[in-house]
Length: 168
Image (cartoon, rainbow, N blue to C red; front, side):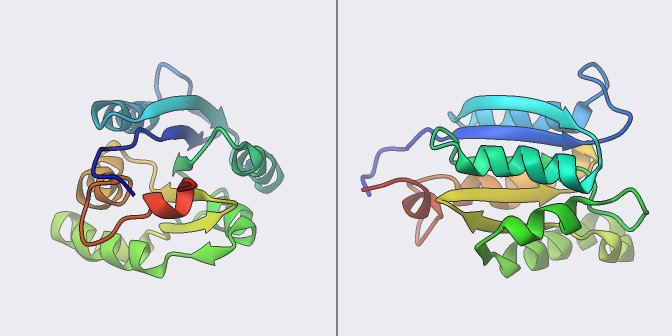
């Protein structure tokens, strides 16, 4: 891995039955953050909170060699319509347990014990990293600014995930 920063092609997926491009503030936060960090937006879409639609879209992105990361927002709570965990976890070859643990620790400082209702998670499949965040702009900003930006920065030391996403 070189010392120069690698711009990764990233996809943003908003999980929602009600959001439109105009009202998708969380997806907008993620697009702004990734572009500000020097990464490339591969695609952005809003997908209904349906297990099979989510699984199909994320499977397509994981299979695309032009995508190195998927940033998802929404569908991580405990309602009947929160299907991100059920849809996406089976697609992951490796879980990144520390992501959810660290996110909830950081989130506790912001929202207290309500953070236990967040089922955020992340994992790797086919040299693609998938981060699943809550559907609020604040949670997306916390996830990006406190964790994700560093783990997608090829110059971050002592380690980051970029070497697992790109061939040497």
